[in-house]
Image (cartoon, rainbow over all chains, first blue to last red; front, side, top):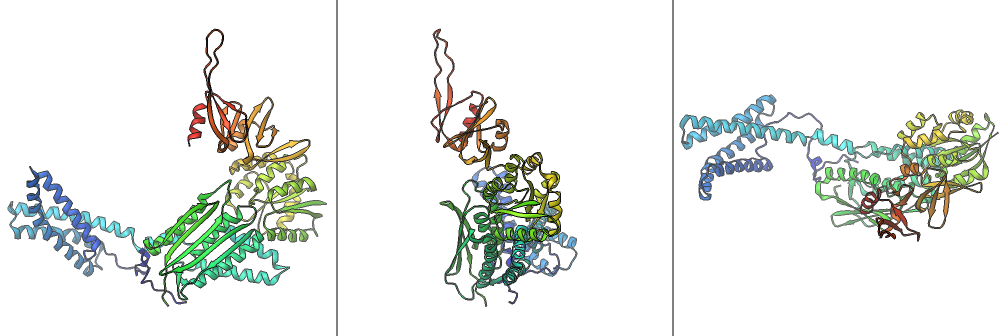
Length: 348
Length: 257
C-alpha cells in the first residue's frame, strides 16, 4: 500500500501541505480569488456608505459613488496585484516587515493615484488618501492573517487528530477477556481473535486519512464483527448485503467500522434478545452508498451517544470531502437507520 | 465453603470467570453454584440458589448490575456482591468512594481470591449500594415488592400511578396493585422524568395520561359553591384521580411538553 497523494480530495485536508514548517506568509494573498472578492466587496461597501452619507439626493449619491469609485477601483486593483507579488517575493522576510509592507502598499498606491488624478485638496488630500489606504491595508492584513491561521494545516491536523477514530476501552477489555475465555479450550480460535484484534489496532493507529481499497475496509469490518460475535453470541446477527463495486474503489480507512460499532453498541449491547443489524454497501456511479440499520431499545432511546459517534463521523467526512459526502439518519419502525454517501476514489 | 454465582450477559465472560474460579478453588474453599445471563434471571437464580457471593457484571442490557445489587440487598440474608466490569471510569470512582468491591475484566485469580476472602464483610451493604446508585445517578428499571414472603419485580414501565395511602404506597399497574414501603418523595426523586405529581399523595405516569376533565363544584343548600377542580383520565385504568389546585399548573405544563 503506497501512501496516497490526495489530488481528488476536496476538503481543507486536500491542500497539498505537509507538516514541514513553511515560511510564514502574512501578506494577504492578492492572487486568490476569495481574497480579491473580499477586498473589493469591503471597499465598495465603504464607498457606498460614504456616498450615501455625503449625498443630498439619490442621483447625487450615484454621482458621488461614481467619483469615489473612479479613484478606488485603480487603487484597489493595483494594491491587490502588488500584495500578490510581495507575498511571493518576501516570504522569507520577518513577519513584522511583511505586516508593515502590507499596510504601506495601499498607502503608497493611494498617494500615487491621488497625485496622478490630481485629487482636489492638493498635498493634504494626497496624504489623507494615503492614511486611509494605510488603515484599510492594516485592517485587511490583520483579518486575512487570522483567517489563514484558522485554516492552517496545523489547526486542521489538530482537528483531525481529535476526530480520529478510537476504539472504545470497553471494547478492548471485553475482547481481551473473550480471548482469555477460549485460550485454554479453543487455542485456534484465540489465535484468530488476537490476529483480528491486532489488525484492528493497526488500522486505528494508522493515519485514518489514508484511502484504502474498499475490500480492505470491508474485511476489517468483518474481523471486527467476528470479535463482537464471540462476545455476544447469538444475540448479534449481521446481514451483509454487499453490492457490486469497482475493484479499485477506495474509501477512507475506518469510516465504516465506527458506524457498525455504533450499531452494535446501541443495537445489541443495550438490548436484550437478538439484534439484527443490516449493512448494505454498493457503488452507484461515482458515489458509494452505505446503509446501516440497527434496532434500538424502545424504552430508552439513548440517542445522544449515537449522536456523538455520528458527529465524529460527520466531522471526518467534512474534513476529507467537504460537501461531497453526506450522512443522514432516521428512526423508522423502532430501528435506527443511517445512510452515508461518499464519492468513490478510484486511483490505482 | 463459599457458594458463588456468576451473573454476566456475555457467555465468554462467564466462561472465563468460571475458569478463574476453578483456579481459585485450590486456595479458597468454594463452589460455583449457578450462572445467569442477565440481571433479572440473576435475581431469580439468587432466590433459588441462595449463594453466599454474587459476581455481578455492571453492564447488562435487561437490568444493570447496580440495580440487581439494589434488589438483592432487600432480601433477607442478602448475598455479598462483587461487581465485575470491563471499563467504566465514573462507576469505578463511585465504587471506591462507597468502598464496594469490584474487579476489572480480565480478572486475575489473585484479585478474585482477595475479593472472595473479603466478601463476608460486604454482606450487609445496602446503604452503600444505595449511595453508589445515587452517586452515579442510577435509576432502577424495576421496583421490588414483597408479597407473601416472595420478592416480585414490577417493571417501572408498567406502572400507571403511585398513590400514598396511610403507611404504604400503592403501585398501580395495568393488571394489578402492589404495596411498597418506599416513600412517594423518594420515588418522585428517582423517577421524576417518568412521573408527574398531581397531588400531595399521587404520582402519575406521564405516558399514561389520556386527558383532563374539569369537575364542576357542588352547590350546597345555602347556595355556597365549592370551586371546581380538574381530574386526570388514564389510558390504562378506569379511575380518575384528582389534581390538586397547587399542582394543576405543573401538570398542565408537563402535559403540554
